[in-house]
Image 1 (cartoon, rainbow, N blue to C red):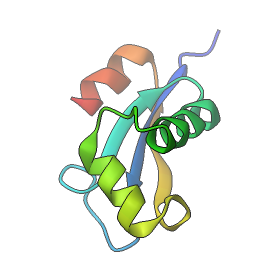
Image 2 (cartoon, helix red, strand yellow):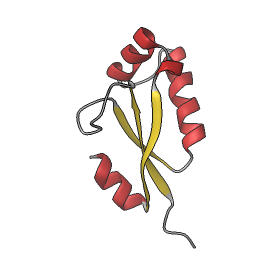
Image 3 (cartoon, rainbow, N blue to C red):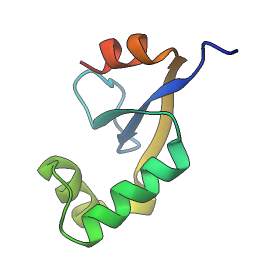
Length: 82
């Protein structure tokens, strides 16, 4: 069994360089599904993070970078996210 069961991902503008202060950090076990979920929630007006919603409205989903920062066990990923 692999310990790499989750990822910390970063959604940000191309000019952002510091995930601790720029963009949006999240944790998931299925990145493709989670990213689709973000976009769907934003399009339906149901996303709970106004900063991400505003960034998508202003810059467009396709203009934001989606990057995996860490791949590790769940507990470590959630610790890093916070």
